[in-house]
Length: 295
Image (cartoon, rainbow, N blue to C red):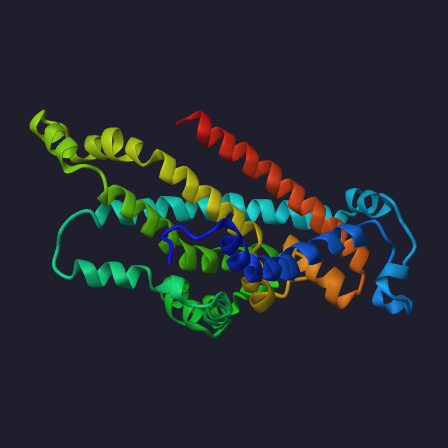
C-alpha cells in the first residue's frame, strides 16, 4: 500500500464527513437566510417554501423592536461584566498556582471541576441557593444582616436577578480562564525568570514585566473565546429566571428562542439571528485583526 494515497482516495474518505456537515450545518443555515426574507409562520397553514417574499421588512422591524434592542444591550452588558471578572479571577488563581505546595495537583483539578458540569445543572443549583430560604440568605446573609436576609427575593428584583446569573456564569467559566492562563504561565521559560531574579527583580515585577507580556496573545484568544460563548448565554437565564421578572433578564438567545418556538414567528426569528450573527462576526473580525496587528 503506498505511503501517500491518491487524492481521489482522500476525497472519498472525507466525503461522509462533508455530507454530514452540509446536511447538519450548511443546508439549515441557507434555509435560515432564505426564511429571513419571507413572511412565514407554521400557523399560516402553508409550507415555508410557499410563503410570500417579505424583502427587508423583517430586518427593518428588528431595528425598531425595543424588546430586541433591550435584549441585545442586556446581553452585551452581561458579556462586559462577566468576562472581565472571569479574567481577573482566573489570572489571580493562575498566578498563585505557579507556586509549589503540597496537594497542588489536587487543587488544580478541583478548580477546573465546574467546567465538567452541564450549565443546566449549575443553573439549577444556583437557583436553589438564591431562594429566600436557601443557603445564601439563610446562612451567609443572615449572619451579616440577621432575619432581614430572609426577606430578600433575588429573582423578583431585576438587578438582583441579573446579578445571580452573572455569579453562576462566573463560577462555571472562571476555571476556563484559569486553565488557559495557568498553562501559559507554566510554559514561560524558567531561565528568563531566574535571570530576572538574579538582577533583583521582585516577584510582582517578574510577573508584570516578563510572564504577562509573554502570554499576551493567549490572553487575547481566551477573552475572545469567552466573549463569543458568553454572548450565547441561554441556560442560566432559562432555568433561573426565565428572562424575568418580566423581560428584565432576557438575553438575545432567549428572545430568539421565544420568537421561533413560543411565538412561531420563524421568519422574524431568522432575521434577528442573522443580525446577531453579523454583529458577532464583525466584532470577532475586529478582535482578530487587533490580535494579528499586535503580534
